[in-house]
Image 1 (cartoon, rainbow over the protein chains, first blue to last red):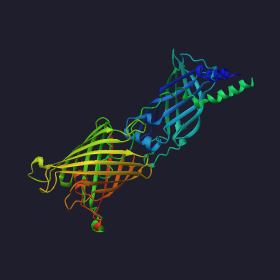
Image 2: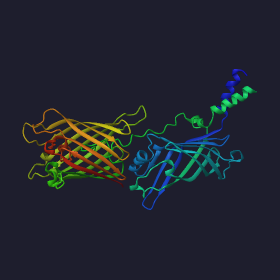
Image 3: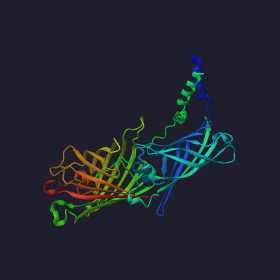
Image 4: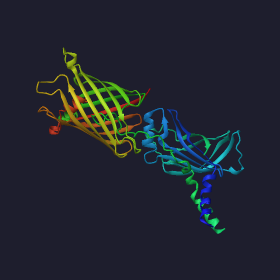
Length: 178
Length: 280
């Protein structure tokens, strides 16, 4: 096989790969305790979906989470998430049975399996989400919970009653074709 | 065919999932954000820091200095006496804050503001330092029958700080203090000095802090260089600062130009600051 073929074969996937993405996905979280509710929202989430095989990747910049209370935001970054050392959380996984899925306007339930990494600690997760497609975009969302102790986040005793052990996460992305 | 297999294998490697995010990684850098927590409170020990109340946040601060430690156990190292200052300050937008304070030292009221000019950001091409202009008017009300204009002292400071690592921050502060009324004709109305301050983190919530002011130009014979060494302890919405200093006053004209204590006889002062932030 000569070099021209080689070049074509290498470039072919780049051109032909059916990629959907966003850089402005939303991830929000919510911690509810009898003492106080804490929530934060991040609109700077990158998500990429490979329409050929159902692979998905998320990158969530920790500094992008904004809180109502600026002091909480500082503590979140400095003491709990250590965003100077671990600037991003990430997820890499697969939408199960992607080849059998036909995207329509109607929302469909999907299962996602993959590896979530927060503060450099990776865990296998298995969650459900909802996906649909309008004219141009693929729209996905998911609600699930994470246990903060799983990612080595320590809560000092003095604020233990203010921060929930299990945090609700909401993810919403609207992916456009690359 | 064998070549085809090889190339396919190579392609799979090349475009494995790790690359998925990189396929769109042209300009996806997140908005640069200012460096957080160069210092924990609006004061380093005595001196002002580049920190100020966040937009829409009201901060209440108590600055408490005990009496001289020189009497030892007789008055429990000065604990029987106190000079107290408290202030309220508010962040109007993220670059400006404004506050009012009152100190029991010479019954002094003060009005002050911080204006942020530059904010340090990690990303290259952005400011490597934070720069804040601090200004304050002190109004002394202890003297009876004084003209209002003679009660005033002005403080102007440039606060230039950099958080070098996550554990170490340093600040330098060119300072001008203008006294409308001085004790004698030999005393200057305008006093220049250069302050330095630093914070060294020991753990996530505890740090050791230091500040001092180096005078520029002549001072009267009794002048002492003011300094303070302290420790920040952070607990949720509060910051506690414990300290030893050679100045009993917590206003600029006192701790910069009027420090009275020294190591002789342990003539130093214990004290603490408490900051509480309210989001309103």
